[in-house]
Amino acid sequence: MTVVSMTANVPLEQQISTLETQFARMYELSNQTPDIAYDERIDDLNKLQKSLKKHYNAIVTALSQDYGHRSETDSLMADILPCFQTLHYTKRKLKRWMKPSRRSAGLLLAPAKVEVHYQALGVVGIIVPWNFPITLSLIPMIIALAAGNRVMIKMSEFTPLTNQAVRTLLADAFSEDKVCVIEGDVAVATAFTKLPFDHLLFTGSTEVGKKVMEAASANLTPVTLELGGKSPVIVAPDVDLTLAAERVVFGKNLNAGQICVAPDYAFVHEDNLDDFVEAVRVQWQKAYPKGLQSDDRTAIINDRQFTRLTDIIKDTEQRGLTVIPLADPAVLPTQRKLALHLVVNPPADSSIMQQEIFGPLLPIITYKDVHDVVHTLHHQPRPLALYLMSFDKEFIQHVVRNTHSGSIAVNETIMQVAVDDAPFGGVGASGLGHYHALKASVPSVMPKLCSSVENSTPANCLPHPTANGGKNSR
Image (cartoon, rainbow, N blue to C red):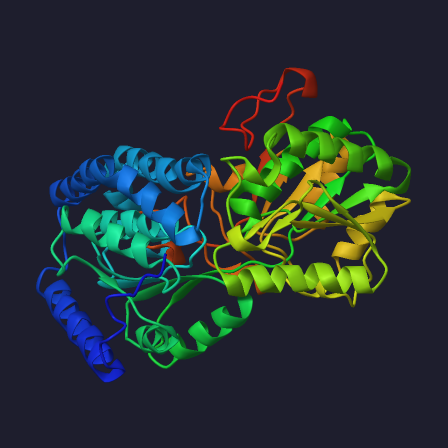
């Protein structure tokens, strides 16, 4: 299906003029009513929740149409349910967040009373990527509205039908003076970043994140950058390989691996390589029993991304590397579907190791001593996530203390993102600021922390959602 965006036939100058006018109106209104009462904030969240319940089926349909095919399980698990969860969590916490917090005046100022009051910033901009356009638009918006702000959302030009579904959803809950949706290509996005927002949130690649930060700096606009990078998995020698394979397959294949926190490559002990490959094969075939024709197999978003991934596969094959596709056929070009491909010990200068993969390709790097892996990570850009498969408590603590990443998940992948009460964000090249764990304002007001999520339940009694419709695989 070919879809033309509503902005396609509108001259760029007119799009930018409309954008600037909309911002000016919202900025003026935020100055007129800088303090939004608790009751109004809760009412806004309730209206959004009601509208989301009404429209989520249409959104799931639109997502699948934009992708060519997107698993309903992927959309519900990763785009719809997290929004309901965040709404529930935020409504429960908001009254406490809004209360002033007492601080010590110290002996020199005694008996003075010191309080920190939390105020809305004003107008918040949110730039949304194509991979999770609902979660990454609505969740930041929920927090911004809870903090008493007005919101402008720049949607991706690669999800036009989803954008229209979001417009309908939000129009049922808010006026455009409180929340508005912006569409358009790179030129519109660039103009969006140059607006003097009170805060700007961007989710996307590291390279684009640098440009967003540069544009925002002209207005001294504070930014939250949720970027990406190559998130590694350490499969320690002690862990059950079936457990490790199940968790890696789940994280690598949700949304066909088009996730900023998807496992990007895995370290496996050289003696366990063959067994791990076989365990991954078994788990993948269990999750997708009909191969690429399985209903739960999501397509690659567009031709550009599909070509980029198939070019990476060609590069690895031309280098004579061991490439193991886990389905036959492994590629369906007309449907833009790819099976998971394992690539054994690719060199550091290969394309698969030089760029964030963002798709169903998994390099496997073998090691002799697992402690050498930690040393190797010291020389890599700090990732958005680090995954550790191990039940060795001493080694787990060693990795937590001696590595840097936005988050660490032990015996899990992806799941740390769903923890509302812990900060989620990057560090260094993988981002700045964080979502979640907020205090009645947008994410920039909190210090950067590393989230650690550990699941220490024995492998033989640990149910886990997998890609086969969210059913337990045990």
